[in-house]
Amino acid sequence: MLAAAMSMTGAPADPSRLERLVDEFIVHYRGHIAAESRPFPGVVETLNGFAREGARMAVLTNKPQELTDLLLPALDLARYFRAIHGGGRLGAVKPDARVFHQVVAELGGRGRGAVMIGDSRTDVATARAAEVPVILVSYGYTPEPAETLGADRVTADFAAIPRLVKELLA
Image (tube, rainbow, N blue to C red; front, top):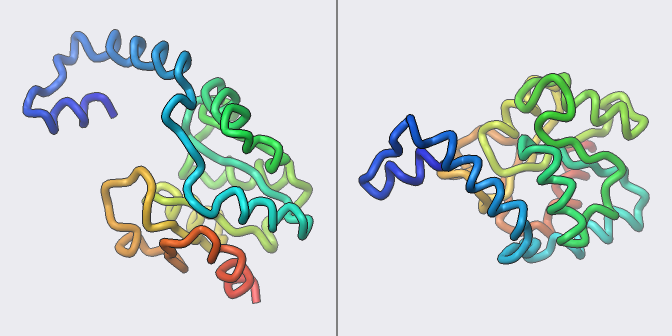
């Protein structure tokens, strides 16, 4: 991420400095984990709705586990998820289907009725590998337009996700 950001400035990262810069970034990020972060519009209301309906929800991210474990409580979102899997928790990361199936198993399921919700090519690849449908939001942290990534559904409105999940599972 840092190498890509630096190359966008016209000053590519010196590979001999990159590891130190990443370490410095992680220290800074850890200390300011949610300083400028907020849930996207509609997320809290949608998660509340899913929780009222008894949906079993999880987080599956490649963000390091220790940072995920700091971020979600800081945003008051951890309470919605029965399983939280960040990078490093298991021996594999997205798009490896094993991590998806591990999360579903931790929720007490077998994949039937599971839907991946994300924002990136990696999320689509994970869903395809796990053989489950995928919904992408058209905003987030990927440079590629979500509409081009091959998801089953794409939305700009997080509040539309419950309806889209029902469509996909019908």
